[in-house]
Length: 178
Image 1 (tube, rainbow, N blue to C red):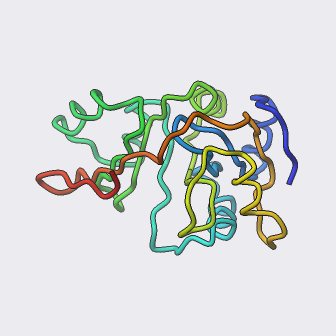
Image 2: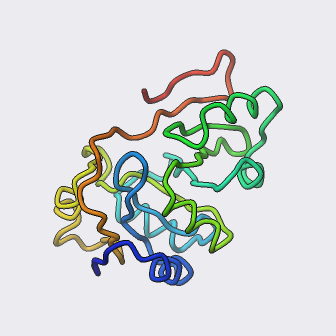
Image 3: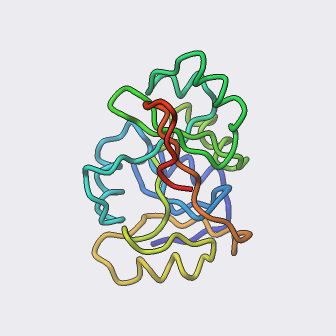
């Protein structure tokens, strides 16, 4: 597991090579990879020990990119424009994908530069707590068979929780994680 300070060029190269990265976000440290690279997504599931039936949310740069993955009706779009960018992940139709526009320049710049969305999840082993503290994140993957390829160390992030998750496929919309 290579650890670097935030470096957009190295992150772009790693994503294009199909690697899985630990990366700071606007909420907690996350695991990210190219959302269109099936091998990278498979590795992310292995690293996290995440059950396959659980969706991997997708970071997108804007609503237009989100519409490439999910159906967004006018009412949903109006709601999303109020909460995005920000810490709200929306579950929408089309294989019930979950998408989010983060409020974090590094991630947005990364998506813009590679021109592809990023599969993402909190940087922790499933059923363990997500963290804003880089040492806690690194300790979860230390000595494991499957671990992230690259760690982008931005130091400890400000105290935060993972994003809220709202299911917009039902009426009224249902909060899945507050």
